[in-house]
Amino acid sequence: MICGQPLNPSKSVYARRVKSNKNLFFLTLRIFCPLGIIPGERKGPSRNGTAPPKTELMDAMNKKFFDPEPRIFAHRGASGAYPENTIESFREAVRIGVDVIETDVHFTRDNRFVVAHDGELGRICDVTGAVADHTLAELKKFDAGYGFSTDGGASHPFRGRGLCLMSLEELLEEFPRQRFNIDLKAKNPAQAPFYCDLVERSGAVHRVLTASEHSENTRPVRARFPEMATSFSLSEALYYYFLFRSGLLFFKRSFPADVLQIPEFFGPSRVVSETFVGQAHRKGLRVHVWTVNDEEGMRRIYNTGADAVMSDHPALLKKVAEEYFSSK
Image (cartoon, rainbow, N blue to C red; front, side, top):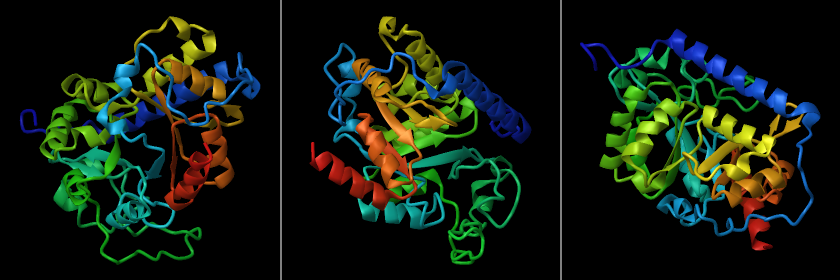
């Protein structure tokens, strides 16, 4: 709070910056992925999900979050069957036995953290408006199961069943032994001290992987908790991808984060390959791929040697992962 004003940036500025960053990402991929061909792609033995080789960067890979190595990420909980980022979705993911639950948080008007992916409420709740314009208490009054449907909107089985948005404190307290991948959605470095205090107070520093599209959000978190696992921001991932495509990655000796969390494809262009994953491993980095919801795609990703897959259907993903890794 500064001079009585909340720390959240305006909705319009946030929306413009997100759109600008995504356009930059897509433009970069168009430049460096012509015709979907990856220069330097070589056929060779797959790493097949084995641990990355010993490198000078191995110390950075020994953070407690990665012990044991997470392979199965539930994207917003079991969001293919339950309303995303709700207690029911998280409980089902825990029941299935996933390694990590991926989730998202926004900073509220009263400087709290609410578990939600969108900056706007209309897609999932029974109201419209910006998350940042509400206090946590106000947000918890809305129906978080209102928009969920598995049949294109013909039915809404969770409407009126009392599902509400959760706070991050509640989530970490409800599942004290579960690992989480927490994405700080809105660009707002002022939220970092509040986030760090909350995670530390919850005793969750070693069971949280912090992610954000915005490096302004993650830099202060890394500075305070160097032992916490973090993923590359959008700009950091773009720079890494440029080095990979240009052949300059060989000269890069250190990186700001532990994990590249990326999609397999952009349009017809494939981003994730055995070569991409292999070079990341040689640099002491992990590769997590989102969001894969079909069995064939899950197997294809694991076959590249990628360390983990995120899915809306964690039960299917667990089945595929267990079959895949048991054969290695």
